[in-house]
Length: 118
Image 1 (cartoon, rainbow, N blue to C red):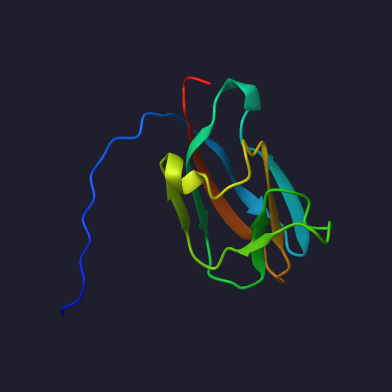
Image 2: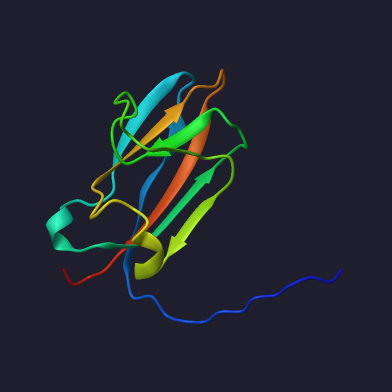
């Protein structure tokens, strides 16, 4: 099997903790605090891993009930590593919203790393 390959190395200094590892009931919305105190640092790593692939599971950084909120599909794992990648997020996101519009519960694992210095 041929194809393109890309190799990258580096170090990302973070204080890492698991923010959420649980079930989102069918047809429900759950909010998760990403940082205990947004003033204590910035997100440098964000990994979202759903237990199943479904176009019914989404995430956002504001209440998805608000029509102006940008909502992202969570069909596959999402991995953002480093300052450049997490700049795609809103400035210092303090909360993450997970929405399951499906007919079965979904488990989502979230791993967050934050810069230890504000």
